[in-house]
Length: 552
Image 1 (spheres, rainbow, N blue to C red):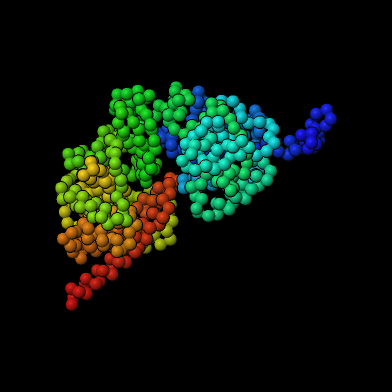
Image 2 (tube, rainbow, N blue to C red):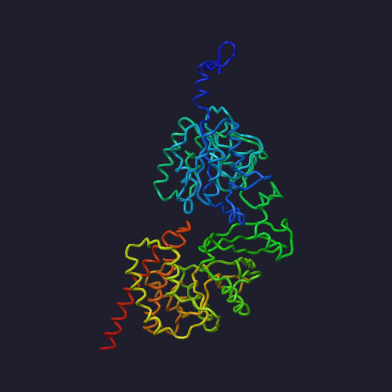
């Protein structure tokens, strides 16, 4: 410091040093709190991660208070999921909330983009951090990214002797990444520039904001290393339980149900892992008594979409036929369900025709059981029902009224060729066919997720399989032929085309309702509406061809 003229002859900081300290000192903080916190199942269905409590103190309040202790009062919180739960912080701590409207489909790079203009001498902090000691400071001299002194297999950076953070291969262990960072000077400006560049291209939709820090196989900022015990990132139910076993938020409905069903205590429920978020529900995997199970938690707005008593009736009807996965528990009031986990399974690959043929064979075998229940899934009534859930809001599609009129005109045709109605899956999509390798020589196929199952024309299931797979007409005809190995009559084929149009509008309306709840399905919703329009036209064309042939 003496050589660089930061101290005087008495080894006291001079004007140059004081100016640099002032220029680099913290001005504000951005807390990222928009995401679902999917790994926190089942707690994330009831509370946002930032509001998890450790010893009665919400994580985000502890962070705010620690920032205040470091005299940082300009705090911006980026919210999305359960954003209303954070509103009280405005009055209590004078923070500013910034809403990320894309939190359902994009990662936290886009959350930071919402607050990008505030990045300058800034702490960037994830909301799910618990710091035993205050790690924020009144003075900072340079930018850094925080890691701990423990090696983790899921980290991608390793600190070297020069305090540089080097990228490592996926097979190596790196320093645990905390997620807290401080940005000042040229690094802050570079991060702002990169945020704009990355968010302008779709390839960074799933990116974490740390992507902006990488350059030539290392981070552009040095490491700040802390002890592993000083900072805990709470990502899972079990991490929360380990930190505060008495936390009231551990007592979720889902956990209490598991305790009652298996007659165990909370500590006996282990290895809770989120499964892929479905279109209707959230599910998680857990272990209990040395076996694995899956618990389904109904998703947003599901209570309006699905009659759980009717679903329970279906499961009771098919119980003796070993068609689906084994149900351990089913609550007909709220839809909570526990099933036994099956090892060595995979979903149907809709691009492999051999898989499709096996699924169609299984589907036809089920239909030919001719099972009956006491409720029906009326396609046209459900189109109207989903539309009513919009509560007077217009469709996002400009020509919706005309498309609906055309689709409803197909009703008489499908009724003419309907045939006998039987228990039909309704949601017989590729993802719901599980190929289960029971042993090296035997593979069985299970059909899961019977929420919509009811009495209907069984050929509706063929249409549903095709539109979920987003097949073109060639693939659709191949699927129809795989079901009708003896050959498909032309009027039946046209009827299935009509079901494709009808079901396309049905699920398009369903997507419009789910969108109003903040759930987006990207290309899927657009393609369903296209099926409604395009296959109405195909039906009309094919019907005219048949009429001409009959006339000749």
